Length: 557
Image 1 (cartoon, one colour):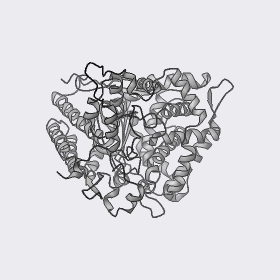
Image 2 (spheres, helix red, strand yellow):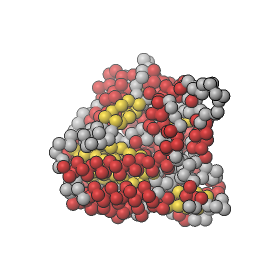
Image 3 (spheres, helix red, strand yellow):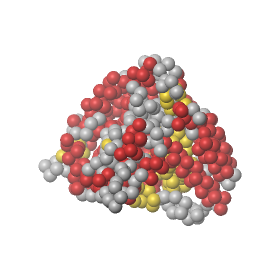
Image 4 (tube, one colour):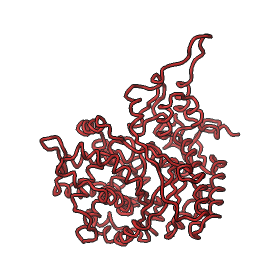
């Protein structure tokens, strides 16, 4: 086998494994060490308790026997995506896990898909573990940015490949479908077998095409087919999708999967909103050139119970809404599909958001923290990924490539701001009638505290820091004499439009330098915010959810 294909374990991974292995001791001398000795600190060990368990279930009684068999196979395929994500994020999972005897450490490593705390800036939490490589396991750990820029290969920025060194030590590109051929072939076979049990013809076709996609790295045909699915009661998202794991450049897509059950009642309530996207695009608070693109309207909004997470979607903070596909051409021609994960959303609202409001929000405004507002803010965040601009106005190509490692943070920040903008416009038109606008504003601010606890290393984390610092400077919210936060609706509107304009303009210009300047000055954890988050820690409020999931939980075994 070519040496290149054997390089699945990063240098950081090897360091971690060596540090966790013991030394020989004289006969009769105990080799046992206190479990705490493998942790970098007692504080790191205590962080292993930041997750609260939640069982992922849904009512499957309305599904046929064939559909239940199909779901079982979809979960099997999802587990393969989970294993592939381990390879991309870390390396040799089995070797790492088998080296650990501390049950708490083992559990925390599983939640983080490696020995780095994803919700604390990717800090190592086990002794002897080096810093997490910014490029995860997508690039050689000794590769510099200068070497990458000098590497003359157009495929070096591809979504579906890794960079490795060949026998001569030179950089080379290896497509996913070659590097992970055995695993992808097995997953594709499971999808084809599942398709044989599908009662819905559109979903059957999608599964067959997605099987082809993951074994060829050609996802676009199946993305177009996925956009046309409207009536399938079971949903599957699978493949190499998001680029958040690649913190070096934001180029590489990581493997993940979801298995979902559609909620027809809630979905009916959401169906009417996608038609207003072109109108809302025209009203964005930016010059005409920055909103000249027309978003696709063949989109849909639906609510689901998610019954299985795999890979990137299950690492660290859990996704509560999906907006796909990411392919810019598909988005412009067809729009996107927005999947709201209602049961996961409810878990975070009940177990995390409401307790946060009780600690940080002024008592007289806590009534404005509502599940409907949380659901809508999250939903319109996903809808707003379809607004704005996908291609730069300056000839620098797609925004995703022009803004490099800053692209994901800007896209998430844009979606947050434009989601609120959409809600306000629809509320003013009478299309949204639930509650009052203060519900959406106060819930939005409370959610900033919830998401800020994920740290500043992720795209969502940096976007949260920018928003918190910018809004605080603008007086959109402030602490009262008792130390609780109060929202000022008038100043909130001004800050919302101002920051939205800034983000959209930088995206349209493809101005990487300006993007990095904003992230470096505003995308940081301020002393004020850190003190607030410390209050939540002292109150023992969970940071995120750990899912108890699988076929046993669902009664499929």
